[in-house]
Length: 66
Image 1 (cartoon, rainbow, N blue to C red):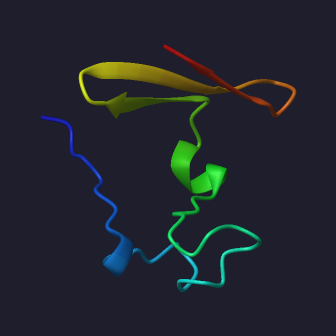
Image 2 (cartoon, rainbow, N blue to C red):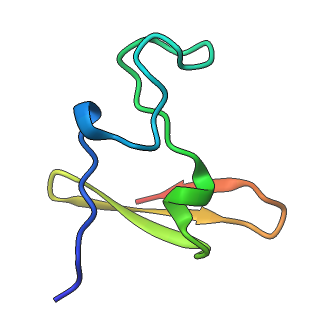
């Protein structure tokens, strides 16, 4: 069984304190893409019953597809 990583706002070790996010709203969760991808070029994001692929291209761009 694959392990799952769950991030919670109150216990997130990679997020800046509330209100200090660079230019973003205080409630926004900011994730560094290097941590999100963890050496991979693709991750799958689930949203309800849907799955989305987030890919990192050779040109260092992000592409989100359903």
